[in-house]
Image (tube, rainbow, N blue to C red; front, side, top):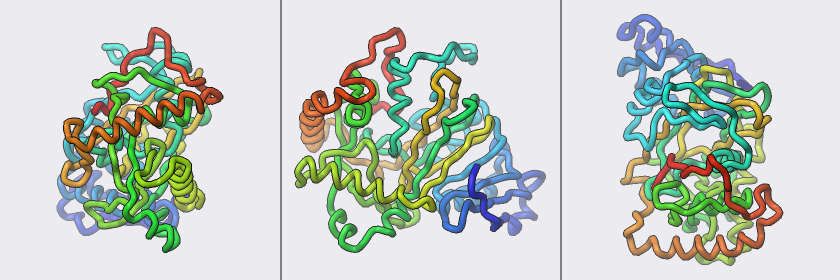
Length: 354
């Protein structure tokens, strides 16, 4: 981990109510801004309600929490995730190895497989599940196996990114929205064109979401864009692409708004999808990288775009189809050359289904 600050936020006021390790909960902010904190002297398997309330308050303030040395099982990941709300999925391996029914892992899969194409796509800045009708509230990863070098996870503070925008840019984007699709992002970033199936994350829908997000619990505004965003209605394609790229590039240009987590086995990282972007970093893909992932669904009252049977969905489908047609000719020089995966691991990617 990098940039640990010196300030300590302690749950002393709960000392009389908490017992054992719970009474020593310590929250160390990372850096000088309210962006990220390291939580120690806590066992996520044994949280009482008061300690969970302390963790939640810190989460809403800092946007993400690092919890070293937890070594959570799949079911323990699920149990902690369920304290935050209904899950999209829980205890799912995000890995470059196939997980067997007995819990062991097989060989490292090839870079050209469907699994790895999706994993490599996650190396661009994004927020989870904006390609679904209801986007994600928060998500967590727990490190099971990490490569010797690389494979970090980075997070970017889009609250601070929005606050730093000049007034003209804030006024320009105040009422703009963009479509979100994983098919778009895979094609645009990698020249990868996954087969479209209703039961996967590559489902043919594109959901329209505002560029400025009001956090439903804190009231903070943030820039709500990333690799899945495209096609701002009312703007020409080139203008839309330039604006979306500039917003993300600006937000991540200040090192104070970016955190790089250097994984150790047993670490748990928990972040707010309503306020941050994140991405994986490249590594030697011949080495194992295994994460246990849990994702909490957003509240429909605040995270719903629309459902596929809503009349508004048709415009998204049409925008996506038109964009993919253009990208088939524009992305032949990308990593995957405007192709589909063709191998024994070309299974449908199920997490984050629509």
